[in-house]
Amino acid sequence: MKRLLPLLGFAMAIAAALAPIPAQAQLDIDVGTGTTCYTASGGTPYSRFWSGWRTQYVIPASELTAAGMPPGQIVALSFNACQSQGGAIPAFTIKMANVNFSSFTSTTFYTGATTVFGPQDIAQPQMGWNKHQFQTPFLWDGSSNLLVEVCSQYNQGGSCVNWTTNCGVFATSVSYNATLYYYTDGNCNMCSQASGYGYYAIRPNMRFSVLSGIEQSFPDDVDPRRILRTDYDYDGGTYGGVVYPKPSLTFRVPSGQTVQIKYKIVGPLPSTNVVYRALNSANVNDTVITVSGVSGLVTRTFNFSTGPLGGGNGQIGNGTLQTTLAVGGAYRVEAEYRLPSINYTQ
Image (cartoon, rainbow, N blue to C red; front, side, top):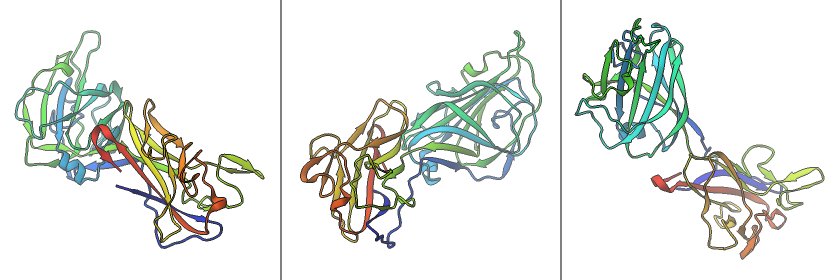
């Protein structure tokens, strides 16, 4: 799918007929809308009535996509507390996994999850959303069901008994076994507990913070950059104290993943003729730019290009946007972002 980005004005004209679609980087996605204040031991992630607990929740992919969640790196998880009680929570741990089951049918805990948070002592939950920022982001593939595990275990000088009271969270009832739970006193290895007591057909509301896709481009639709000058080409140089950057794209690269991007400028509108196309190499057909070996927020400045304003049709340019050759009017950036490992395209 094409990602439509800014409208650009060369010289003094700019069209207002088409609006850019804003790129999004970090999204907060809420899954679950229930208003039940859920305090059940092993059901609430903050089960401090016990010295330790291990709980796994499963969320079908259909619910995640219905909530608007794209594939990408999950960097934080929040629970919406309806109480503030129970005190600090020791060795709080969160794990995640992409799984192929959408309901628990066995009381045996899933063992293939990745630790994303903790073990870390956390303060008493407060009313409202309590955010747990991950030390290790987790890549949701966009098609698998998602498993979330929370556990806590008290172990102080060999004593494994220390309990207060549960802290409730808002939760949503479902039609399947969404929660597998266990809790007890005196177990110093709770997070390794092999099996649970049983299931709940209710699950805490969760907020996932997700990093995904394109964040910014140059040129963009932010004043004064939306109107490009035609006295010099945009070749990365500085002329008369004004910087003329080459075209670029800023986007998220999940850890350990390869991202593929495409970038072009079309116009003058309403024409959709490609006047500038970024290239991966000095090959006019190499239009897919591959980025790997890096992670986080990445800006790729283009050093190869083609098109009437990118070096000439059938010719290879050095990434410069040749606005000195442009016809006045409005132009549009179109970009594509792809994670081939999970077949996701933005």
